Length: 284
Image 1 (cartoon, rainbow, N blue to C red):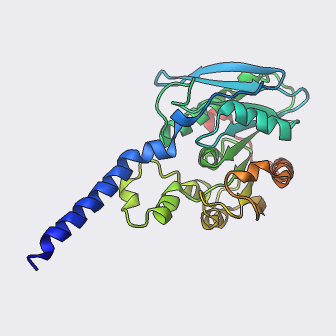
Image 2 (tube, helix red, strand yellow):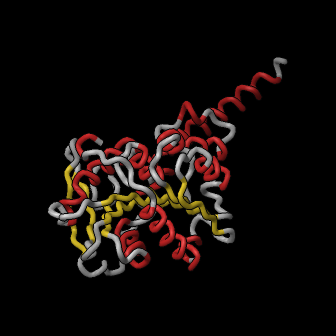
Image 3 (cartoon, helix red, strand yellow):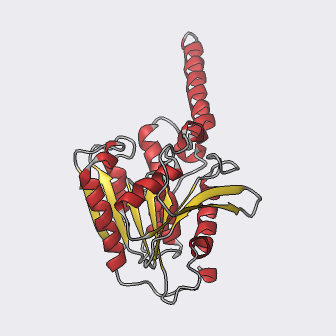
């Protein structure tokens, strides 16, 4: 027994070192803002640059694209390594009939601050409150409709907006039930629930909520395992479209024509859903 104690101590020390490294590295793994490059392609004609200042004094930078004749607004929430400008360009090419807003997350240049789940959701609420002004649609005679489109980690932000009744529908691309569940599945040896600072519980946000939600998944996704998307779908009270591209993974999904078709179908599905009971913006 005495011979085993040094080995047990060594194993325990290695385990604690690995777990400690995961704890310290989690922000960089979840929000790799240093690896995100500024967009290289020209923004669509008519795109306007805007800045917002958060309640705690951080400057957020983004772009608005107004489409004449549209009374629908889509708030775009990117993947964690995707430039917001590129996301706007990509979405604009596939959804030509909706007004678009895309802002760089906190800590993603040129936006200021440090990213976190709490901060990203707070900033999304600010963007939603300012959307009509940023697009110059405050005086629209007809009521506006607001939708959230979230890609990958952005699906967690969009889910929070939808769950709080802030939007009329949501499109979630490669979504998860929670980052916590994804991390538990990947780091099964670690006490993830005790360590994780950004659980992104989309399942709790959307459970039993009557907001229409469309889901697009990748059949060979190794970043967000299909089981995690299926677990989220099982909690949705009002799924209006659930589709999987079987041959796609988390990255190649966006290169396939099937995705372009599904994204348009998803928007049409949430647009066609019966409207939610009107709630004043300030009360949402």
